[in-house]
Image: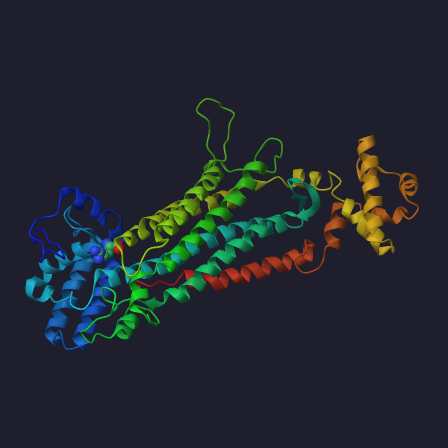
Amino acid sequence: MTEHIALWGGRFSGAPADALTELSRSTHFDWRLARYDIAGSRAHARALHGANLLDDAELEGMLEALDRLDHDVATGKFFPAPDDEDVHTALERGLLDLAGAQLGGKLRAGRSRNDQIATLIRMYLRDQSRNIGGKLLDVVDALIDQATRSGETIMPGRTHMQHAQPILVAHQLLAHVWPMLRDVQRLVDLDQRMRISPYGSGALAGNTLGLDPQQVAQDLGFDSSVWNSIDGTASRDLIAEFAFVMAQIGVDLSRISEEIIIWNTKEFSFVRLDDAYSTGSSIMPQKKNPDVAELARGKAGRLIGDLTGLMAMLKALPLAYDRDLQEDKEPVFDQIDTLNVLLPAVSGMIQTMVLNYERMEELAPQGFSLATDIAEWLVKEGVPFRQAHEISGACVSECERRGIELWDLSDDDLLTIDSRLHSDVRTVLSAQGSVAARNGQGGTAPQRVREQRIAAQTEVSKMRAFTSSSVLESK
Ligand code: ARG
């Protein structure tokens, strides 16, 4: 068993201070990249072989040792020692144990931890884009399912939290779907930019050994290798882009969550959460709390914080690699770990919640939410909109004065307000009439919403092809 190795001891006469070792160690978070590092090592070994730096037997021995190491990592038999600085150091120690110092010592030629880590993180994030994207699509599926179940039920649509116009419940639910679909699109799109491998960049300037970065790139499932080795080792904008998408997912989850929190209040009574997705109070026996939604709302702050911390670390960092860059990983790992537990809870909560359609329908036409319909009816009668708006406003103020709703106004009341308000206006004084009239693409008319739902479903199935693929497993 190799006791302790450093990858950089040669020019030093003294050992590192314990305080440095403690500060420097990253295995407690970067160990999750171990299997990607081994995949990189296999490709690197083949590149060394291609440059005649390993003969056939050496390549075979190296790949065999790497396979065994991979197995030991996967089963937990091999793990980092406290002295190992990072994932690369630990794995080199493991390889030396399995392949011996002579053969094992040859693998490091022509690569640096700088190009290694930049490559591994891209591979890992490509896989995590698929994992997180897939779990987000589960939330989307739950929302689409609720939208389907709600049929043509109408609810009050709000702006400024005030009753605005009646809308289909399905329209409101699908409004949360589109931003989530765009998040998955962003991950698909980002994957194109992540398909470029930094391997072969060496420490910063490239390698002298005639290794072919293109071959390594293809071996690792990338499309090609970087054009600039400094960019390859020192840039982290792709990580920041990934972190933005994670933060945006958090924001999107927080918005549907806030809606559910409000709907779940006694005053609204729009939703009943399943027991499996609500919690009780330790002192108030009557309480049933929307903790999943509240945690989603809270964790959005944390996801944004991870993005902000990462970008602050990157700001003004000189080229090429600086050790600050080691701080790129924990923020995105935290985002991934957070969403990994949050997303299934949110999709479960949405899937199992029961909407109170009666209550929603009952409130839909209230709060004078049909006032716009009166104005637009007048426009169709040839009244200029400025006047129509005034006339409809006068109806509202008359109702407010008398404590009644718009449809309670008699034919005489209407004609007194304006002679052009004849009784036909009643056709638009229902929530059904109001939603049916909004029948342009993107509108809340039932037929348009059905088409919208099918469009969303088509998008989901396209994206499932991406989220069910994998980078490491296909290696
Ligand atoms: N552990 C480092 C990181 O995560 C990679 C090692 C590069 N370290 C170095 N001293 N060149 O970025």
